[in-house]
Amino acid sequence: MNLNLSVAGRVLASALVCFSILSALPAAQPTEGRQVISDPAIQRAEGQRIAAEARALAPKASSTNTATLRLFGSNRKLRAEIPVTIRTTVTDDQWQTDYTSGDGLRFRVSRSHNTPSRYAVGRETGQLEPASNLLLPFAGSDFWLVDLGLDFFHWPEQRLLSKEQRRSEACFVIESVTAKPTPGGYSRVVTWLDQGTLGIVAAEAYDTRGKLLKEFQPKSFKKVNGQWHLKEMEIRNEQTDSRTSLVFDVEVQ
Image 1 (cartoon, rainbow, N blue to C red):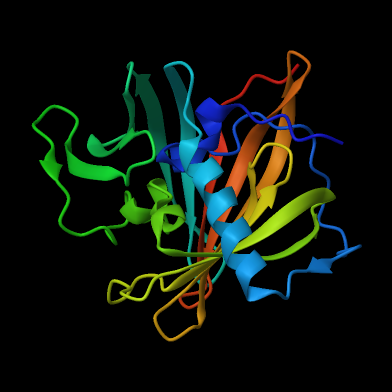
Image 2 (tube, rainbow, N blue to C red; image 1 turned 90 degrees about the horizontal axis):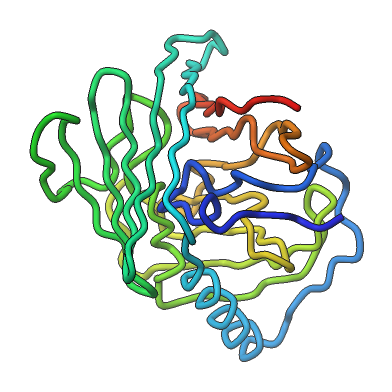
């Protein structure tokens, strides 16, 4: 089964939309046919190549998505539901994605080809200012501002750890490491990328002590006009035991 991922949704400078059009992904299956890459030189060379290809992906057209953030506490109880509008604007040489909550909070991620993301925050009706804190939660959720830009693909150390099945898809397993992590942020990110499209199938982010901090994964899909669209994605904070689901508004065929 091929992963049919629209690039407009793929880039998580469209991070919340990075899985927006996919083929059906069934529940997670046991890993089969895992190929471990043991040669350090091949790990680095292939890791850099795949990360560069992932960085080069860009949306082809402007788009607008609406969704609802569902915030759950450590007691598993729903504590808030927040409407969100995600608008991506594409120009000749760059694109930007605005994430706007129902109360007017706006996060903006701007990208140019193969350059790190630029971040701004503010109110929907006011001037946005460059963000000084990339660990700022969006609307009180488990999504941080830095989660929206996929900056880890720009870190200097990229390694291909293995090729394996994840959620029944053939994946590259890429480890991204930074020697200078932001205090309280990520030092290492492991990403499962579909080998055909480089769509993100799952990701794990580790803190500065090497402990698992967050897990990202798609949860459910709906068929629209013959294609499978992401209906829900989830991020779990393993250290606070909280989680946030982003439920997209898609019309079911």
